[in-house]
Length: 400
Image (tube, rainbow, N blue to C red; front, side):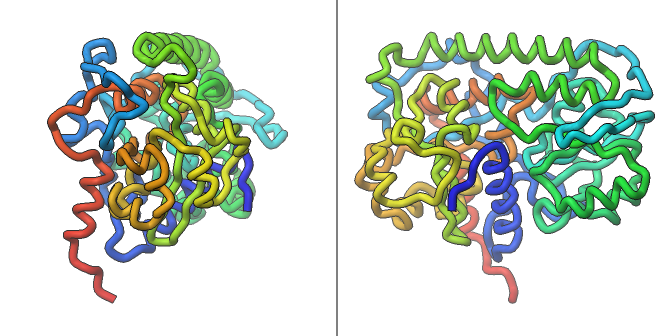
């Protein structure tokens, strides 16, 4: 089976949350907790994030990043979303044509639900300064300021009409990464404006997403300001990366994004137009999957992995933990040992709810991945994926 953009990442991330939630004894992904549980974020905290706040230019760099050994965790400096300094009042009512071509009229933004598989729409609403108006969250949203909001998704990323209606939202922003569509229609039938947002998530679409969300909430000037800030931040982050990444193409780290859920024996390689390719390009590396003609996402094959010969893998933290860390990954995928990444145990992990959360935190994600790829690891110890795997091994089995 082949998954194609823009919904491919969403489908797999949603699957990840469902599978992890169902696996006894498995670590819960960031944001995949049941309703009412606190959301724990693997990134931005803990010993493996000792250098999270340090500027790229201040870190000791690897002499030869292509042949570096050992793993690292990419950490955001903060779990918070920076709010735009603009208090322009929403211009309401406003009628917009959403991503599915429906005309939707929004008259009240005092009670907002912003729901998608990556938490990006909610982060954008917070970035626009409307965080105080958000009354609930999806299972992936767990950045600062959202921890105590009620969760309105069940069984991973299934919208709960009952939970949503009980909150009395005046507008819902969502996309096709979360469903089912029958629940969205039920909410429309209940008289709630439901605005469908584009689900195309890449570094270069983050500004368009901001503009789209701002337009739906009647805060166009705020959207213009946030999109401009975001564009400048991403440009600055790319420049910082360019200053430390190898200049010659032949010297660039050859990277593959590997999606894994060990409890379900699910392994996918992300290629061109998956979103992962834009991340790998932004950190000055070579997306090997794109190089070998891999488009969208397809189940991993040993032959493809060996043919790619990656120097490093990027994985979601809980995906790495689900296979027992790097050692467990090598046991489950013996072919990996025939690649430089496997021989050097070179795996970069990042929290599941952050690595593809393209939006107001895009620049921070680029910097975090670049630090993990190019900087000498701190003496703090193992990355989050390895730590989570160790914790899982030590945990008692769940009762039947």
